[in-house]
Image (tube, rainbow, N blue to C red; front, top):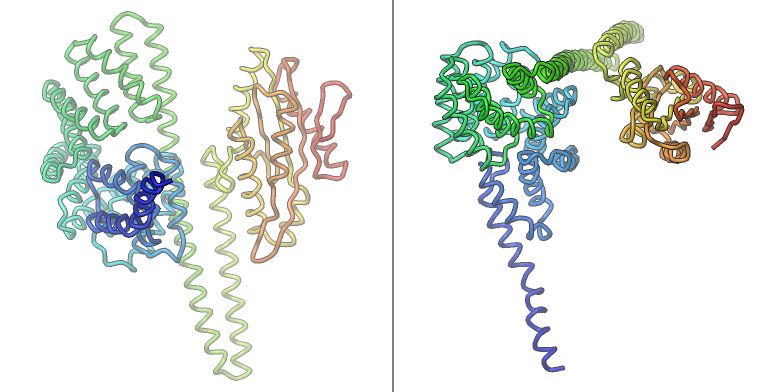
Length: 580
């Protein structure tokens, strides 16, 4: 017993004294870290690892700082989903504006990489609304510096250059070399794309000077890569190879996947141009392994093009054709992405402008209400007349907004309201999946779902409430079916889902889970009950066409509607029916 006490007492003392000691250690570390500035990758990695064992002792304010540092670290290392999960902690009016702005500046590039362009521009608009509430020059620089890349990918290089020049001016205000380093990154890349090689070289060299001053490994690698790109365009391939090799070492040190793939591909291209086909082949294979896993489409276009040229030079024309086909398919995706970015930019710009119009109308309305309180009965009638005119104007603006919004929806393969695939693209993917299952004699399930009494929702609560219902249903369908197959909005309140390699029992289980997950939708304090009717059909190879299978699912859906709605009906190719 005495020995047990002697062993236990030091542990108890450690537990008693750890909290104040750990709290002080946490305070010391955080006092040296500025979450609103651009911290070099090595320093950031060290910070996150030091904070990890101390995080449980953090105060709410300290936790916000830690979460910002973790978000930045996860974004750099490519752990995007956990990084975006942390954004939710900051997306609240109770969080100080500086922390919200910084979280949004980290989130926008992630949204952009994931193809969520509308959310990228919406978040940029949030930042612009919050900027007047902060005097932090670093934050103002970071906010401005996001715009050049967004507008570059939208194909608007002139606007992108304007923002890049503004970014450099904002970076100078911070007196921080790392900000100057990142500002010249955007500026130089835009100048290169605009064909102003001389300005690009000057910019990349200035970037390199500022980055080296701060030992910013990742951005120094980017600067070397930019210069290598210029040399390559000028057919100075030996100089390009030297710079690409330096960029590769720096990007590997920073564990920056995009930079690694970019450098490997550049080395392959220059070696191929010099006739070093075997060396080029090795670099290209390494580049493709990174690019295909990370899905960097613009670089994949160049990689497949080089792969095709190599095969063509060797006389392997069939392999060359395969590579060129992959290039053209990827190139189409890139063009579709640029189109989607441009549409997102225009749509968000329109929404912001429309919101400003509504605010202006409300301000006029408030002015008229103030006059009403001080006027006679005659003035009151005039006031009512003025308000009627304003309401009509607002209604016309709303109608115009709806018309332009519908126009934007048709320009993309994604339904902008629900985020699901639209009819054409949904069935295009389903056709491919169906024929693959048919060839391999595997089961394929078609599900057609329709919101019950949806017209009543619109008539009773309004179209805005109806949109909320569609979005809520789409979210549930995406969570339960889209992750396992294909989910699309194929009509006003109709949805189609397709599941491959799945028997009917498993499909029924998923649909039941989906039905159970649907909750009433809240709209301005009103609870809207929502149910769906489902029709299910399965093919085990007996259907030659997807349309025939969908028709059976439609028949099952009609039966579900006729049996009282909120039903799941399974259609077999015989007269057999099964009700869930």
